[in-house]
Image (cartoon, rainbow, N blue to C red; front, side, top):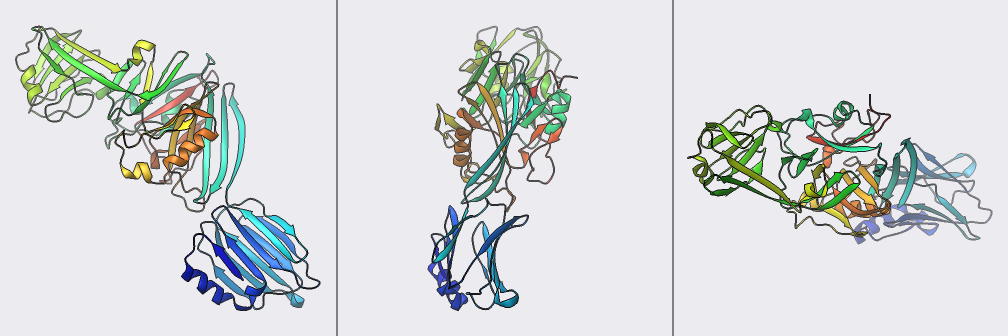
Length: 466
C-alpha cells in the first residue's frame, strides 16, 4: 500500500508502509486536506462491491478475491478517517472497511480496467431551510472542512415586514444578573432568539447596549455594534462622549454607565443597575431627579426610579464635593456617531466586525480582542444583513470533536458571506452560544446545558405574541 498525505510526517509514512507489507503492491491510500482516495488494484476476475453506512460512518469494499493478504488494521492520524482494516471472509473473499469519525458524503466510486477508485470528500455542505412563520426562515447546515465537521443553525428575518419586531433583552430586565436565552425568549413572547453581547462575571453587558432608546452601558474600545430602528439597521464601530456640567460652568467627562466605579471614574447609574449603586465609601455621589440634586452621599446611594446617580472617585469625587441639594446638574451623553438621532432604538455591541460591504473585514486587533477570540476555534454566534434586507442570526456549535469543532473568525466571516451577508459582526460565543426557536434550544451548547447569559436578541411575530 502506498500512502500520500500533505499532513503526515516522513517518519509516520515509513512506519505505515512497513506495517502493511504485501498489501502495498495492491492498495494506495491518499489522505489529503480536502478528500480521501482509496485505490485497489484488480487481479484477473476481480470484482468489487462498495457500500457505506452512516451511523457510524463506514465505507465498505467487498470482493470475492483477497489481494491484500492477512487481516490488518491501520490507525490513521486524520481528522476524518480513523482506521483502515481488512479481514478474510468465507471462500477466499475479503472485506475492507474505512472507519470515519463523523458523517461524510457518500463515496464516489470509479471502476477502471485495472483498478477501483473510491473517493470520499472531506469538504462538504448540506443545507436545509424551512419557514418558521411569515418573515422568519430557519436554516440548518451539516458541513465539514479540513478542520473537521460543524453544525450551523441560522435564522433569516425579514426586517422590512412591519409585523416582525426585533428587540434586545436584558437578563431579568436588569444590568446585573443572568438568565437563559430560552427564558428571555419566553418572557418576551418571542418566536426565536439568540444570545447577544459579551458580559462580565456578574452578568453586566461588556460594551454598548440600549433598549427602546435608553442607553444602558457605554461602548468599549470602539467595538462594532448593531443598531436597530423602524426601517433602519446599522452595523458600525461606535464610541460615546459624556459630560456632567454644573451650574457654575464646571464640567467633568462621564467615563461609564451602570458599571463598577474605578479610579477617577465618574459613573452614571440608572435604575436598570438595581436599587443602589453598591459603591464603597471612597467616593462622592449625588442623586438626580429631572436634573436637580435631591440627595448627596459618599457611596451606595439609592437609585430613584426615573432618576440617576452620579458617582465619582478621585478627581471626579473632587468635582462633586461642593454640589448641594437643589443644585442643577446637566448630564449629556451622546453616541459617536449619534445613532439615536437617526432613529435607532435597540443597540447591542459585540465585535469584532466580520464582513464589510461584501468582503471579509475582521477588526479584532483594532477592537482589542484577546488572542483566544482572534485565533481560536470555538462555538460562535454572529449576525449580519443581506443585500435584500434580511437579518441573519447564526450559531455554530463547537468543542465537540466528531460532531462540531467550531470556527475561527475567518471561517465565520466566510460562512456569513456564503449565507449572503454584505455586512456582519461577531457576538459572544463559546458556551454562551444559543439559538432558541419556539421555546426549543436548536443548537448543542458546548457546556452540555444551556448557559445563563446576560442578554439576548429576540424575534417577535404575531404568532408568538400571547
